[in-house]
Image 1: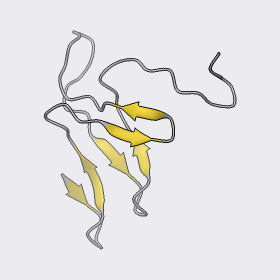
Image 2 (image 1 turned 90 degrees about the vertical axis):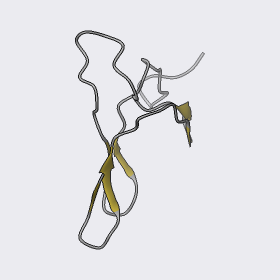
Image 3 (image 1 turned 180 degrees about the vertical axis):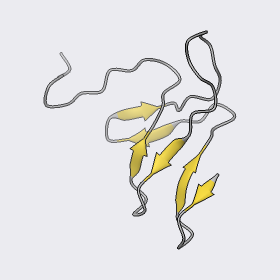
Image 4 (image 1 turned 120 degrees about the vertical axis):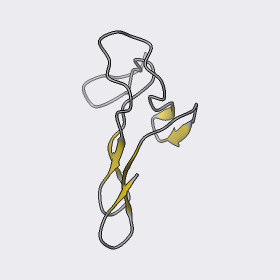
Length: 71
């Protein structure tokens, strides 16, 4: 775990199953390495304002965007 100078969380590594509720649905951060080509221990990163910057996922997940829409 690493923090910004003002104490806000900068990044952390997840060690067990967690579910993050987001506007895109429930996302599960990577907490274990299931594949040979994936590095374990990738951190979840946050901007200094607390918004997510990087969220490595446990499984490939379709995220709807302006380029990819559901249905």
